[in-house]
Image (cartoon, rainbow, N blue to C red; front, top):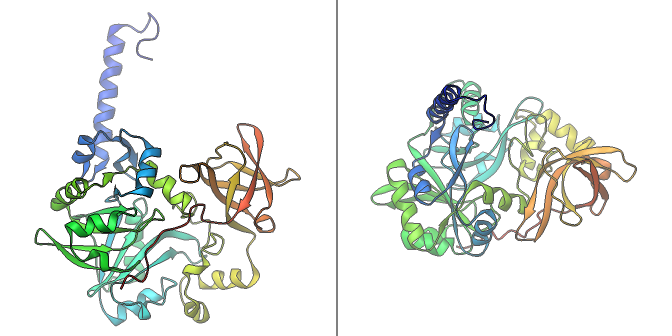
Length: 395
């Protein structure tokens, strides 16, 4: 509004510009930057504030092209805003963590990973996470917006018995796509021998890096934990080998096509793993014992069912149903809400996930999505929308 109208004189304009400048300075001071920030700038990234960080949402080619390049070749994602929590300890640590997470950690192999949840007593999800058993204890990858609160919760639950480090001195990058194994192995030899959801320590420039064969795109790929001082060099070498930097925009479309949840949207403290249709991630042995936080609710829901459940939703035509779009049944009764929705470049059409009343969750059930005041037809469908391409049984 600076140039609107004669009454907005030069003095007021200068004052407003000074206010905007101070606001921008304050925002820049308050938001964090990853160690790859300068590289993102060099590659003409467009930034957004996400979970307190300045993060690249896309680069010059745009989200759709970045998405397709990852599916067909290899993309690099800066996920250094996420939390890398190292917990050090032995057998007692395993027993104590099993009281928190619904996992069979004692039988988890060394350097293997599992997807899990940090829940409250009502089985509401504080965070979803990846936990990996290492020689020293466990490495837990936490969502960026949750990591500080997760740390406090775990520290209290573990009664300060163990050394816990939420390591800000390490960056985290993910290289994803069918060419990723070949490209990364050219830079760090031996990573191609990893199986899906397994990892190990490797060496880059005489520095220890921890690499797991994992990711959140539905493609084969790796996540690399590396010291901040060396992440720029590693990323540039991967780019020189043919990979490209990819922003958070394409990361979101890739994960949604793969039917994967985004915390704060598809998951939160008002939803349980059973309602989220993620009961596969809960150990059957742990369910039989029922001795983890939230287990009473989980067991009850497994036995009695749930009133709402997460489903895939395929809109007809080209309409995009975004988060909070209301879902109606064929009798025009409100039965649920979209939690994630976008255009899926790999399937060439709109895709969405959301929660509906359980009686309407059967595949091919016809529903209607209210977008801009008009109801549009859609149907309940299976997840994922795009067939996952994880590599298993390499060795």
